[in-house]
View 1: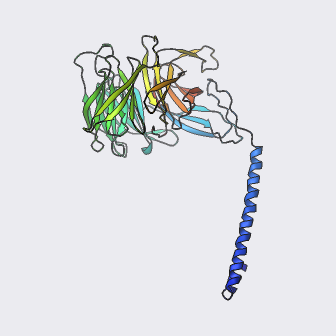
View 2: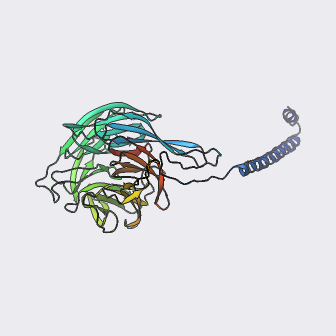
View 3: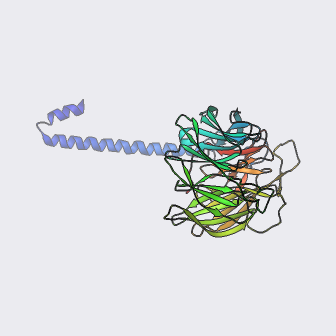
Length: 460
């Protein structure tokens, strides 16, 4: 009211208005500065009372404790198993926020679905649509299958649709405008197929191409027929690549984003008998690299990818190295498995199976017997040349690390141990690329085939 009265009188005396407003502004500014200073001093006093954040040792025993002061946050993971299940896990990690509450890391089973089929082999997440796709390998034939699920906030899965497809599906690459198609590699079915899906999750077969060999390959036991092992979308979303273990080829297709048609172009021919399994791309400011891991030859091959004007791809081989980086004698049945580039594009990570090259502390605290483990191998990437430098070999947490995935922050690796029926979460140093210790584990019935985080990220 005082300000209003002063303004009324100011109609006759403009100078009074100016002086009054200036004095009021000065007083308000002075009060603000005093209040701000008191607030800062109060917050600093409170901070001095907080205990420092502390880490304790991480040990592989049941639900493993990180012992980090902080509040807890949960992350969902999905796991497939040949036992016929898709399992939802909740990983609870402490937040390093400086609060006084202390929590531990836990990995708990929260739901199971058996709707994928008897032999789930692969999981693929469309995070933006809340869709999870599961492949059923269909060991007993005559068909395999693909199932679409809706992912719910509580981790439970709602089955949307299921489609019978040719036997042996083992990998998915999603493509198409807005993402509405699934390119699928069929190992035992010697095929590549495409399945379209609607915004409601309904599935429709678009095409299927089945291949044959004129004669068995150099490894007739494993190369008696074509065995497409993975479907990979290139970084431009214009091509689908399919490593074929049986044919010693990487099949390449132009991918029509509208019609979902795949048009074959000249394939990448690899060393006879090497058995290409999986691959991973890396895009830098100057070049695009492609890294191929071969199961039968136990090698990693690096290529520079060349996009030709005639809408084909060429590959300039940069190197071929043993999976472990150096030549060594390996058990006869050793087989390279998964290969991924870290989210920051600085490291390449690969897994190898049937080696038993480590012995580690048992995850069961009541069992003192050490357990054998296969390795996970990490390389740093020279982004200027594509070359790899070995950083580390680390125990995967058990036998047969068929599949693994990395979370979006790059500080956790989830490993699917097919030979032990176990999921292991490993702490990872983002700066050095080194795996550090086991964070948590969960026993899963049957042979575990895949594990993925409920997150969305793209490699740089």
